[in-house]
Length: 147
Image (cartoon, rainbow, N blue to C red; front, side, top):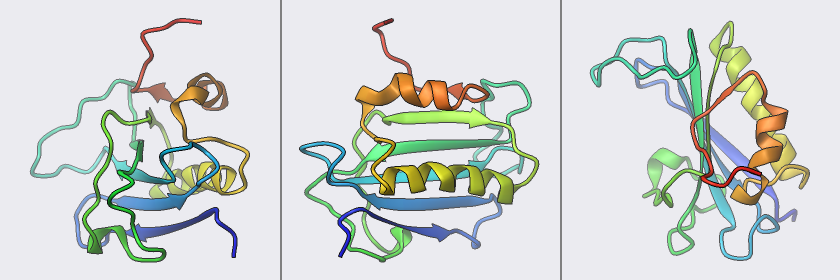
């Protein structure tokens, strides 16, 4: 069985489009083997108010969090069915524009596929690579160190 693996859950029970992926990527970091990627729509009004847009006319936002190794998510269990313990702050976060929820999901799925293939690391040491791969997106997580 391949150690690298990802599964996702769409949240149809909310008025805001959102999808989460859990990724098993033990190669990416010596301590953190699981990551949660969340994608959600920024255009649908909801009870929490209006989202802060850092990119003019952004339609979607996604975040990548390492998961606490003491609270691993069993393979193929939907994220909404277990207690998710994310490490803070997020490893990555971006706002971007997409013509539809499906287009946004497909774009993030490409990143997930790269992580599962071992070609894109979710670890923060690779932030400059992510920023180069996603030049049209606004990075929400920044380093204090400019290289």
